[in-house]
Every structure is written in C-alpha cells, then in structure tokens.
Length: 147
Image 1 (spheres, rainbow, N blue to C red):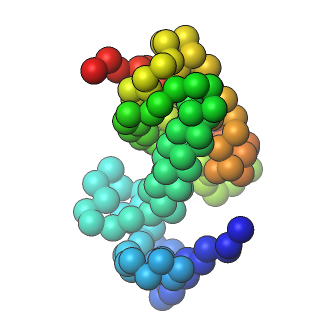
Image 2 (image 1 turned 135 degrees about the vertical axis):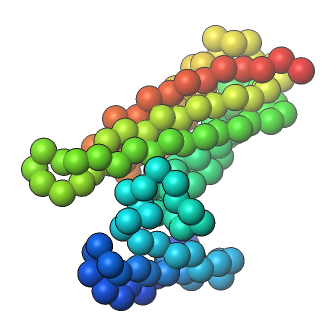
C-alpha cells in the first residue's frame, strides 16, 4: 500500500504565527492554518488539524462501512458520515483531542436496521483511522434511512 504525504510550512510563534498545509501526494490544495483560528468557534476559512482528522476519519469510516455492508450481504445505496473532532485541554498540560462523534446515515438494500447498526459498530472498530485514534473516545450515532 502507498504512503501519503502532507507538508506544513510554519512561520512565527504559536499565537502570532501561521502556516500552510499542503496535501502533497494528491496535489489538490494548500490550506491556511493558525492557532487562533484553530481555537476559535468560527474558523473563518482556515483549517485545523482537527478538521483534517475529521476528514480522514469520515472518509475512512465510509469506505470501511461500505465494505462491511457488502460483506454482510447488503448493497450500499448511499452513506453519509460526519466526524466531529473536539479539541480541549489536557490534564497533563497543553491540548488533546477530547472526543470524536461519528454520525452515519445511509441506505443499504438487503440489511435491516439491526444489521445496519451491527455493520456501523464493526466499521467503527475496524476503520484504520479509528484504530490509530484509540486514545480518543469515539462515539457513534448510526441510523438507516429508508428510500
């Protein structure tokens, strides 16, 4: 399997500095980051490590869910995954990720609601990004939508 790369160039201090995150492997974009925007309620067009983790987690989870749904005999029609990643103070000092909430809505032909929820839980446990984030509490809100 390939290795993917991102690069950040930073100038200045934590409080007054800023940087740019480049998605180097895909070459699809460069995004501004700063600590004041990271800690603000309104990101104002800037991204953050937490948003990038949320993007990684939601996309990884969607792929894992689709694979497991098919393996369980279902045919995924649509799956929408939202990952809310929270940053907060760390008792040991500094900051840490304090929680991740995965919200999953989808339609899978051939799976009833109970099977859908089982697949959703298995995907949460089996997603490579979930595995990498085992030190963070990950909660799941999953529901199947009907056509």
